[in-house]
Image (cartoon, rainbow, N blue to C red; front, side, top):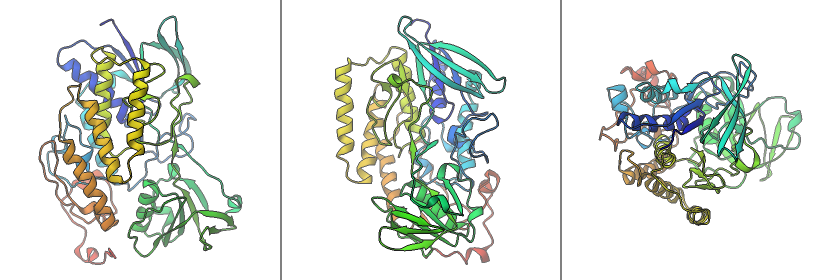
Length: 461
């Protein structure tokens, strides 16, 4: 193997998975390529690196993260667990199946802190432009060091894009919203429910962010939550205080009008209308162009860019699986870049992509989508040495989770599951989720429930 040089853009879960994959190889005593990773934030973790800031950051760059206070996992932790680093390994105690953000971030950091990954990462450094130099068969990448306000360039044989796709908002327009006097924001800039206590709020969209922000605001004392959907409602058994209505047609002052002829006055509007895949540092011929889906067009095995096989994309799919899917992608990408996995000629790659895209198109239910992504990960893992785990049991947990939410959107986070990695059965959190208003790591790991008198007041409808 020639002395390859590999560049990684982004040190979120995908970029860290890539570093971890190479370190796993190094620990076996095998030589690895020269690796450099660049992260525009001042710490690793990507979306899990919470900041109170919105708009732009300290150095004038657009804020990457969409993380907010009081966010708890909206899926069982047993479905995202690393195969080579369990929650039991990290916490050395049994915890619940639905941890809050700070706990999950601590877990992510726990694995990477056991390694030497930080030595590969240059923080506060943003990619500005990429060229593929045909004569050299390398990428030239222009970076800005935000702290020193300097520009420099690097050359790489392979380039890994792990920048995520939940940071550039889709922001629709509705007639009359210009004169709305209340708060208007996208979910990207939502930082917590506190400011909406006692308010009537409108959420536009029917995605997971609308579901979660709506329930979080309800939990923290919002007067009412109205969710306006474009095509299909979320269709949960909502408690009194949360309801769904068809799409907004227009605003008149602080009143929103909907397609079903109803109207209501609101104090705030939050657009939960999704995100764009945005790569401003990439030229047109290297840029992935896709909407949020389980199998984007143009990337072989969901990883290798079909028009230039030296370009790797990680984590660009819509996601049921998360951390362990990024691992599977990273292990596949590592072995491919190191010459262990061969890719077929372009026409055959196109056939394979088309086959997977057709499979997604034939999915009719959420359970079908779970099965589809399960098979995708199985396909990725097959040629690698990523630690094997029972994907079928994880898929069963996802389907049970879907039923739990359908049964009661306010209590599904109180359910518990069993790890397929080490068979540890989760424990119920000491306080029901609807009553737990402190999402800190310290509070979570305590064994003291909230006051029993207070617990008796919780209304699960």
